[in-house]
Length: 346
Length: 235
Ligand SMILES: Nc1ncnc2c1ncn2[C@@H]1O[C@H](COP(=O)(O)OP(=O)(O)O)[C@@H](O)[C@H]1O
Ligand SMILES: [Mg+2]
Image (cartoon, rainbow over all chains, first blue to last red; front, side, top):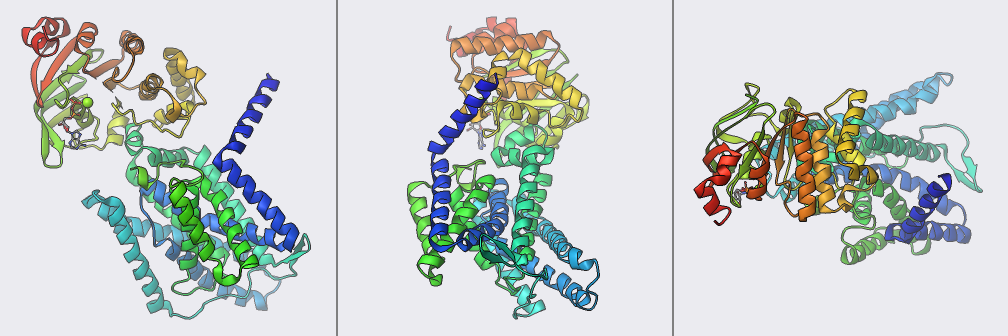
């Protein structure tokens, strides 16, 4: 019995390795290792840290695509909302900590900041769904993809300008979340902030994966993504799921924004770079494929790090873009196929 | 009366399909709705299931109006709809699909009982429990769709075209399962194009033509009716 199970697992693993998804993942790991041997451990470390945060933004984007069928171009603005919230929450905390170095806020301050950003991001998502997307959904579902896309572009412009109007166009940043010496891994110095940013990403991705796979509500979200009518038939209320999904996806982007505030100070269009990165990932992984987005995030991160390393830092958007074009020509459904049916199938 | 549809008018957008449709289903009955392609049979079921909103008319379930409820609320009242397209969750396994069918059941023990019940009815699904629904054959998917519909222990099961696209042997299989269910007290309303077969197994039937109910009565009488024989059976 145990023998058989073992054999089955091996067979599956073997089959997966030979599939396109398996080959790409293996190739990514091999290339990452070769580059690490060639240039040093920081290549790997940078890839993993960039990849973790990209995964947060990309997962949210994949979720809006897969569940709500919205090609979201305002997703970066929820990242921006995360940075802004984090800035206004953490600045007073760090002033206080400077004069009270023994305070418990030294440890809890950054965590409070991230939670605050998450809550504000989730609220922003709820407001957008209620005021914008559900209004469109009520009026017409014809040409939904195009219309909702145009709405997201408008929303993005409004949010960027609202930031500029109310908070100004200057850079609002912090020096660091965590004081103390950098950590050394494989002879590479990693600042505590970057290490913690990765830990944060790993924890959130794991929690999110658990939620989507094992909880009743997570399964309902996947069900809606795979077949809306089927979901209705089994008694799942669509409006609740759509609202929840939107707020989840915005919260994920805001968490990423807060986690990276030490690298990306808050300014009106700070969300554009993460937005592009997330779109690269989502196209690579297959539209609406939430778990594939995690893998894809690390691939895009590797591609970016390698481009900077071997070609030059001005090229780090050109090479991924070129690759996306190639992928769209040869495998329009993305490398991982689609765990959920994306916009294109509906 | 379990289900009472009175003077129902419904359609898609401005396009009206159903005109003054009235029908009833009593607890424990096995009722069929037959008619030519495009008559509006699926539309009738979809309207009862809350997936199409009525333009006018009444739908009463246990005496309670359900015409204005969305599909998920209708499902919670105890109506399971097995659609023609089946609407399975293609990237979930057989077992996960069945678990989703029990979405409205909170009680873990009850969920387990229902799962055993469905696996008992369709032993084929047990073998396939870890297979993705999207990779199964047409007949297996039909069984899964019916099984998923049975998971919440519905008061009324609406089945659209159980035999559509199935080989004769599988058709026989699916009809036998429906028979078993009826003998266990499940109320079923079935829509079919396979008129001979359906009229042979059901208690009562309605004939739908161009969105109107033309004839109704005991299935055995309908099977002998001159009009029915001429239009559907070509005799
Ligand atoms: N989603 C839809 N939008 C517009 N018209 C539809 C839709 N679904 C079905 N119809 C039309 O409604 C009529 C009845 O269809 P249907 O109820 O599926 O018939 P049946 O199930 O009896 O074959 C057909 O003319 C069909 O073209
Ligand atoms: Mg039909």
